[in-house]
Length: 145
Image 1 (cartoon, rainbow, N blue to C red):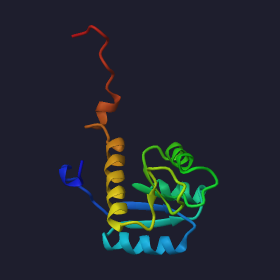
Image 2: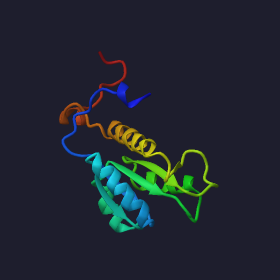
Image 3: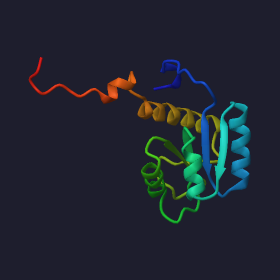
Image 4: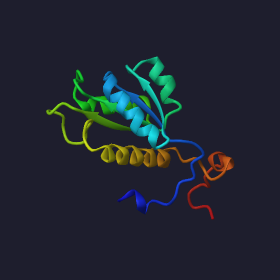
């Protein structure tokens, strides 16, 4: 479904993107590209405690799986296990990567679209109850009217 089919999302700030990459050229290009779209970009070089802190205030994580010691699917699984409410976008410039990883030097619009879709997916998973009391309200017993 194209993004234009989504209902407008009320956003009170920029989309916050965490970039996990060792490639300083890619990080520089991505900062420029996302900055022009008014995204807030933070960078972490490793999946460590610093990345955990930054991820808590991120909407989307871009994972550079180039030269990953394990396959990109494992990298995505690792990100999803650590940060289940944040949708990862995987990029790579390795030719052997499976489908699903975007080519990091591919068309910029493709990466922007993937980040926006991941943002909308993350927002869906994070949606809070309609009111604070809805989360605390016990469910009626089965068969009760």
